[in-house]
Amino acid sequence: MHPSQYEHLTPAQAVAYQQQLRGQIQINTLDKPITTIGGADISFNKYSEIVYAGIVLFSYPDLKLIGNATAISRTSFPYISGLLAFREVPALLDAWDKLEVKPDVLVLDGQGIAHERRLGIATHFGLVTGATTIGSAKSRLYGKYEEPANVPFAQSPMYDKDELIGIAMRTKRNCNPIYISPGHNINMQQSVEVIKNCIRGYRIPEPTRQAHLLVNKVRIADGDNPNTQYDLFT
DNA sequence: GCGACAG
DNA sequence: ATCTTGTCGC
Figure 1 (cartoon, rainbow, N blue to C red):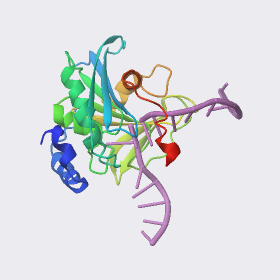
Figure 2 (cartoon, rainbow, N blue to C red):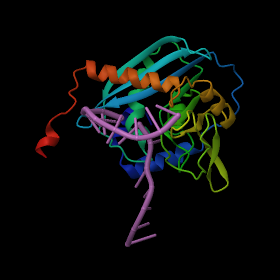
Figure 3 (cartoon, chains in turn brown, blue, cyan):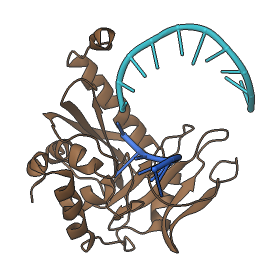
């Protein structure tokens, strides 16, 4: 099924589709050396169906800016915990298709396999594009873990029963950890290593951090009003 | 039944 | 996610 058709799915059908995709996930060691890396994110106004997607491309591991691509689209699929991909993947795919050169690995803002059905947005996007992806989330969705020590790069495994599904990693002292998990075509250890190499003094890894800044600029430039005053009347 | 719940 | 000012801590 093509992502452009996701908006026609009911939540139950979306869940069924995830069950179908689950069998195609590949969590393997990436043999190819990583030379380029990308960060993807979405921005939107909560009162609008317009979504701004963006992907920023960098060299790796020096993280020099190489390029970027953005796309503006519409979505009617609501945000439902566990079904984030059905709302954001279509727009991200538009931006991805505009990229002249695809990165060796793409970091997405959300979970990879640290998901009840192992289908976080990073894994879903990897399956749709065939790209190598990593999920880097700002909060936990699924999995049990112990709080990592309050020291940069302290890590703590995230489990579903006895299965390792992610790593909670503190990237900065006195800041909440981020939740890393492989998306597709890469393993857990490599995923964590790549993200570690992308930390530049902020809690969020550079690829995803820059993508976030980019899509917000695009949204504002497109003429988005902050306080759409509607909430003042409701 | 109750609490949790990516962006 | 987005909005929004100050404020507490390193």
